[in-house]
Amino acid sequence: MPAQLLKGKPIADKIKEDVKKEVEDLKAKGVSPSLVAIQVGENEASKVYTNAQKKNAELCGIKYDLQELPADMTQEQLIKHIDGLNKDPNVTGIILQMPVPEQIDAKVCQWRIAYEKDIEGVTPTNMGLVTFGEPRLVPCTAQGAFELIKSTGVDLYGKEVVVVGHSDIVGKPAALLLLNSFGTVTVCHIATGQRGLTEEHVRRAEILVVAVGVPHLVKGDWVKEGAIVVDIGINVKDGKLLGDVETEVAMEKAAWVTPVPGGAGTATTAILMRNTVEAAKWQLEMKQS
Amino acid sequence: MPAQLLKGKPIADKIKEDVKKEVEDLKAKGVSPSLVAIQVGENEASKVYTNAQKKNAELCGIKYDLQELPADMTQEQLIKHIDGLNKDPNVTGIILQMPVPEQIDAKVCQWRIAYEKDIEGVTPTNMGLVTFGEPRLVPCTAQGAFELIKSTGVDLYGKEVVVVGHSDIVGKPAALLLLNSFGTVTVCHIATGQRGLTEEHVRRAEILVVAVGVPHLVKGDWVKEGAIVVDIGINVKDGKLLGDVETEVAMEKAAWVTPVPGGAGTATTAILMRNTVEAAKWQLEMKQS
Image (tube, each protein chain N blue to C red):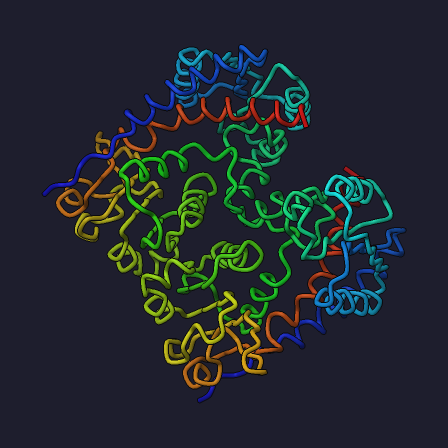
C-alpha cells in the first residue's frame, strides 16, 4: 500500500482558525497581538515570506507591521531599534528577517529580541525551554514537523526517531521535541554522511525528519516499511522542486510522507501566527504576576 | 588489552590550577569571584557537596558563602532572596542546593537565578546556549563527561555517540555538547529500555555516556571494541558502589572506561569553580559593553 500524503495545509488551516478565535478573546481582554517584521535592506526572497506573513496575520486579526530599514544601517542602530520594540507594549511579536547585510551580526541582533516577543524561537532562552521539554515559543518549521508527525496519531513513546540535519532552527529543535516525547532520537548530519553512515541510521527510523537542503540526499529505498517521513527540504534542481528525500520511491514503503512542497513548511506561517498569540499571552502573564 | 582508566582527578587538578591563576588575574583587575550556595532547610546529603564546594573554593581563592535558610520559608521569600543575590555586585555565582522543601518549586527558583550568575547551568538561557553550540555556563557533570572524553585525544567528528539517560542536567547537555562537536548522537532512555532496544544502540557506540542511576544497566559485553565509556552513575547496592555500566567486564573490550567512583563526577566541583570564574568574567563583559 503506498504511503498517505502528510499534508501541511489541513494543520495550517486548523491552527489559523484557532488563532483567529484566540485573537478575538485576547482583544476582548484588551490585548491586541501585533507582529513587527524587521527587514534590513531589500531582499526579493524575503518578500515572499513577508507577503505570506502579512496575509496570514490579517486573516487572523493580528496587526502586521513590516518595518523596512536602510541597508546601510549599523548593527548598533539595529540593536537600538530592537530595544525600542522590546520596550513598546503595543508590539507583542518581533521577527528579524534573514538575511541581514554583512555589517550586521544576525545572531547578536536576534538574541537581542526579548524572549517573550521572540515568535521565531531564535533566542537562547526559548531554545533552552525547548531543550528542557517546557517549550513556549518554538521555531516554527520544527514545530510544524512535530505537529505533522503527531497528526498521524502515532505514539512517540519509544519510537526510533532519526533526524538528518542539525540546524539550530529545524534539526535540533525537532530532535528535542521528539526526544522530550520519549522517542529514541538519533541526530545525523554532514559528518555522519562523510562516514557513509546516514543510510544505516535512516534504515531503522520509524520516524524520519530530514532537513538538510540537499536534493534527494535520502534515497527512497532507505526508508523503513511503515515509517513516517517528514521532508523539510525544498530544493530547486533543473527547474524542478525536489525534497531532501526521494519522495516517490519512499512512498512505496513509508506509511506517511510529506509532499514537497506542501508539507511541514506549509504550517510554518500559521505557527508563526500562533506564536504571536502565545507571546501576547506570555507578556500578559508576566504583567499580571 | 584491557581498557585504560579514564580518571577525573588529573582533569580536576588541572582545572583547579588554571582557576587559581584566573582568580588571581581577576582580583588584580578588581573583580573577586564569589559563590553563594543557598541551602533551604537541613540536608545531610547536601553537606557532602557544600563541604566539597567550600574546600575547593578556598583552594582556588574564591569566596564561598553557604547561606542556610529556614526549612519553612515560602517560595516567595526564596525568590526575593535570589533576586537580592542577582542584584548584589559582590556575588558572582549562585547555586540553589537540591533538594528544596516541598512547598518550594525548585525549577521556578532555579530559573530565577540571573543567567550570568547561574554557575550550575540550570537556567533556560544557559541551556539554550549549550544547544546552539555556544556554551557559556554548562551543567558541571555533563561538561566533566565531555572533557574526559576529549582528554583521550579522540576526534569526535562523525563518531557514533550513544547517551543513555536524557536528564536535563547530564544526559541532554552531554548529548548536545557531543552533537555540536559533530558526533552522530543517539539519546536512549527509559522508553528505549522498555522496547528492549538499549543494547542494540549501545553495541554500536564508539563513545558511550551512561547517566541513569540504575546499577549495571549496561552490560559489559554490550560495549563495543575500542569504545570510550563514561559512566556517570554512582549507585549503592549491597553496600558496594556500582556504576550504571558493568565496569569490569566493559574493560575487557573498551579502550577507555571511567572508574566508579573517580570518573566524570570527580571533575564536577572543579568545573563549578571554573564556572564561577567564567560567570565573573561574563558579568565584567556585560558591565563593560
